[in-house]
Length: 507
Image (spheres, rainbow, N blue to C red):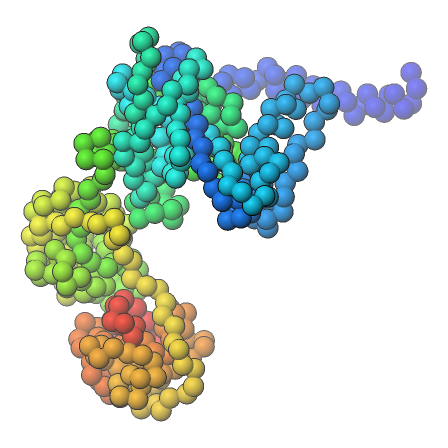
């Protein structure tokens, strides 16, 4: 045996041994529970592929999403390099051709763009649930059953805010399989789940994983409340079901985090509790009718909680109240902190929009608020959130149209303050109905600069007391320092009158 062969053997044998060990030790862990195959066999016929086509103006779009570089630089991604005899070469050629709209995609004439997604049947009458983004703007929608039967479908209703849609098709003569929803509220971290869908046009694909997290907010919308799973989900899985081991739908696969465009084990599904409520309304009204409180809200930070004597920090801070909204006649005011809505605890800001949206329009609900350290209950009859409206967070930043220095009458907490003169109103475009003390400058290294206060902001209240001149602001801050307060709460307006609260450290 040559020295070279012996050296090669020494390198290879340990790897082979390691592989051998892996083949013995890991399959039981990788396979998951034995029931996965039984569940998949029972429900797979209820999972459908959604095929859509849309006519678009070729001049309007550049590369399709599938053609963009993985780093988002717009670099065109080449087709995978496969051997000439590969059985997958025809599939990938067709896939990437469709993603780019075919050889004439750069021409000037309108062209058809095809896309594929997933969905699932919830009723034997042909009712299908999928994602709104799967069928949005489609000219034609077809449902493809697991046996390959292709049937034209129509949209019953869709909801952009939850990214859900309901379709309807006429079932064939044979009996079709439908699945039921389970209770996503009962999910536990680490529980096994099964995803079935149509990734990369590979229909009827079954993957399994666990529930990695619940109540995930990925900043995709005002009602984010996703189930996070490591079950493999890729492009084309959108709209497909996430099952528990009882074969019940506990989520709709909607989004992934992926630098490369493929699965890295971080997928998100809309929980069934949300899906059921939206689907019921879409089937009944062809739209979603959400409750409306008519407020602008902020997160209650530790600094704000300390300023308002709220321990521990919790709830949603009311930064503004719509004059025509339901909260106004109920006596809810800026500075109130909502800690309970219709019997549900509001632990943080994002809990309030969800609770309000889930409540029926016209329902009279009890809203528990904290005002100046004391709890009060207000009765509010909810209005209806129009499609053009959305739960509003207070703006974190305002910008000034003027950068020239202004005459300063007082300085406090890194802020240059002045009375609201006619000249300053004109320079900063401050509306006449905005009252208070204007900020004309902010020290770059101050807490105020870090909290994004800027010249042109108007301080309306200090520690929930109105101020009308710079001296008022200085006196209130000095008094709070003497009282041992660690922070001071400011109610700040921009030039248009939009309010927000800012807590600044007292140094």
